[in-house]
Image (cartoon, rainbow, N blue to C red; front, top):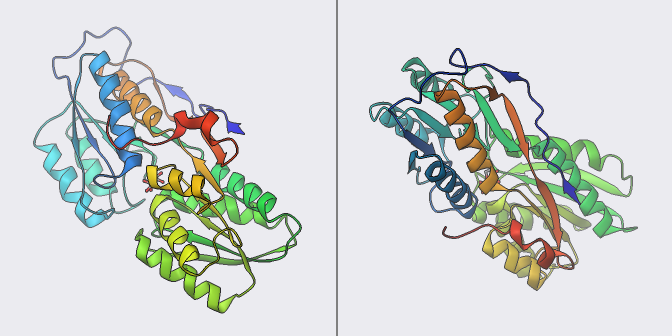
Length: 314
Ligand code: T6T
């Protein structure tokens, strides 16, 4: 199943008119959520290719951890380099608002890629998967894997205040209620650390020995959950549905460590982000919200969907 991309937003003018000359400043900066992670690497690859095609220069800056306190100073630092546009994946729905407003205050066009602020007035455009729908798809996929079995189901979230994973958990929670054979035992936060995710799964196995399913809302939570289930000899017995498709997650899908993955299209998020930033810079119409594809992968159909596997390098 592929959830088709659907631009949910309004088309609006920005920068006041359609026929301004192309500006001289062709510098763009991409600020990702965390360094050296296949989701953001794939996003950067898409963004770099699109920027090159359009004659723009794209520079990427990344915090060492997915953490607002590490990302905020990067945003402030970018301010002084005066790019024409910034693509950013804000790691917190609130904490990044002030630094991002400094960018717009300096006349820099801001586009959100993947995650977003609660305040929709800061960025001119936001590109992401429909994460709530992704959570819903995860619940349907998990319910199908469990079949007529009964038991408890857990959600592993990252950090409260992450727009994407909170939306995935919300979508999952609403949908899983439709399956009376499954008892939802709630979500647990993991600080986006695989080791914490692994601990949460083993603690839940002790507290709920009838655990039949886990939904891990992103790459790190999924990788940690797979390790924990393998160590507890529960691989395959407890169905694991992950989000994202890193090389390790794809290996886990192939070798039975995880039963399904909901893959995103980070390269398109990057390329569409660049398109919107350039439109804003050049005074062309900008689309406020753009949704990119999501697709469920299982061992049986993964090879035919290999274009959704994330990259380790461009
Ligand atoms: O799932 C992606 C991204 O969509 C999310 O916002 C944060 O985590 C990832 O980068 C995967 O680690």
